[in-house]
Image 1: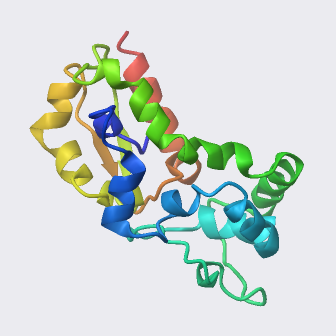
Image 2: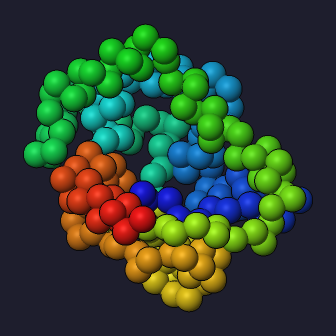
Amino acid sequence: LSVPFSFRPTDPSVKPVDRLRAFYGDDYYVCRFQEVGDIETELAEVGTERVMKKILTYRTPAPLNIPKDKSFWGSKDETIPLPSWLTEEDVAYFVTKFEEKGFSGPVNYYRNFNRNNELLGPWVGSKIQVPTKFVIGDLDLVYYMPGVKEYINGPKFKEDVPLLEEPVVMEGVAHFINQEKPQEILQIILDFISKF
């Protein structure tokens, strides 16, 4: 769901974060997450509830830029309306979990992009050799990253994943696809695994 195999290991000498910074700039979320403690401090100032609502309701193909001036988060007085698939109870649950454990764990995933690329170096050129189904939303920011839409809809994805079934691009859905369309995603999964 949402992240295709085009995010596979590439040349281990090329740093993915440097490529993202060159393309999107320093405000791009992956780049902002690199400095240990910086984004954690900002998120604490903004407040966990506001952070969760802004991230979960981000529904645009534009890059996720989080400028240091904190303008992304909006005014603390500004209400963030929730879509029909996200309830205040859902947000409250996420808030309790992130307030309990903090944001460092999830953010560290992005801090490790360069190292993961190095570690996956031996598998450059590998193919996924199992039956695969892929689903993404047409409002997912990943779908609009350079070359991703062409990769998903062109021949290269099938070359890298030979047993890939026709990818599904769901209309009106963003990055949190399994929450936005749970029944549809469940049905796609059930239809897929029932073949085996």
